[in-house]
Amino acid sequence: MMPKIISSELQQIKQRFSIIGNSQALLNAIDRAKIVAPYDQSVLVIGESGVGKEVLPKIIHNYSPRKHNKYIAVNCGAIPEGTIDSELFGHEKGSFTGAISARKGYFEEADGGTIFLDEVAELPLTTQARLLRVLENGEFIKVGSSEVQKTNIRVVAATNVDMLKAVGEGKFREDLYYRLSTVTINVPPLRDRGNDILLLARKFAADFADKYRTPGIEFSEDAQRLLLRYNWPGNVRQLKNVIEQVALFHAGSEIVPDMLISQLPERGVTSSSIAITPASSAAFDYSREREILFKMIFRMQNQIDEMQSKIETLQNSSLSARVHSAELVPDVSVNDTQVIQPSPLVRIQDIDNTLSVSEVKPRSSEVPRMMSLEDTERETIKQALLRNGGKRKKAAQDLQISERTLYRKIKEYDLEQL
Image 1 (cartoon, rainbow, N blue to C red):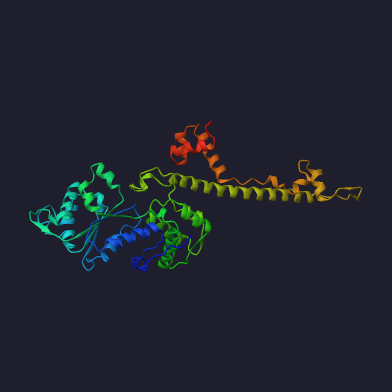
Image 2: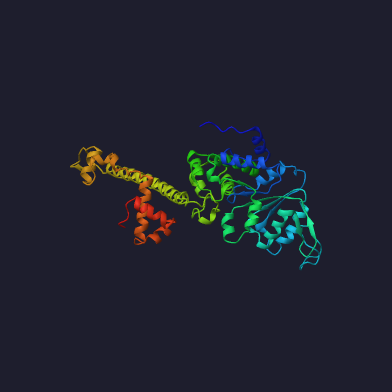
């Protein structure tokens, strides 16, 4: 595959804003932000929680004519509903309990600049109406005032919510949605960024080794495959958290899959972990269910390998002990005449008829056969069904997968008779 050619301008933006990754979807998002930056339009950035949506509004502001004015980022989901209007639009003295003096809101403070409204879908409907007025004609009214004020501001918003669904449910104003989404930029989830996952993991590992002054870590090939295959419901934020922990607790080591698995959620990915977007809501994604089974089978395969090793060790030690005991049988003498003992292999048959000479060298057929991942998965599902009396709902809960996935696996492995 030919390497992606990144323009010098895009490369400069990546370096300036410390963006790691070369996936085409990510480059498209950056390029879209750069193109729309000079034009004074509202922009809506969409993407799952933790993908890094907050960097695009900074690119838009810094490559726009407003770059020398204020840039203010507001997390709408972190401000209580009762004070959100005051925070955004300001208030007059005595307008509510605790308003001991007049206060400017963010829209007044950022006049001439850019305001970034993160988690914009969390705004109350009354606040949405006020925001719509700002977008339409640049007007707002402070809480407790009747005076209309003007502001010249650019709004960039972000959300991890399916906005069209929110509009359909009456949770978000349709007219505001279309005002905000004059231009839409979609930030891809980490699981769709391919080798960017490894680039980010290595960068985070190096950063944390420097931060904590600890020896660096390297990732084994199996660990790299696990990083690429895992679903990453928490996206870049989750990956950074996992790498920080392994970099701290396994400093100077080669990271293997078990070290990563121990930092991943035990119950796998839940439906609430991933935001619903228009692109992802079209069809059910079975990859999350497969990841749960993958982690479970990976652990079981390791256990099988350990058991096989222990069995071989026990067989060898048991045989050595029996041969050794045979060699310690005292010589038999009759009338002080020494009786020449047979060789140890022959004496083993004389002492214990249950052990033959051929048992000294175990046959290769006696070594337990390695189970494939498919065999392990089939046996795991079979045992879960038997444990739960054939009740598929309980078996699915036991395996921590959906009933839909269990039914599919039962049919695939011909377990319908259980």
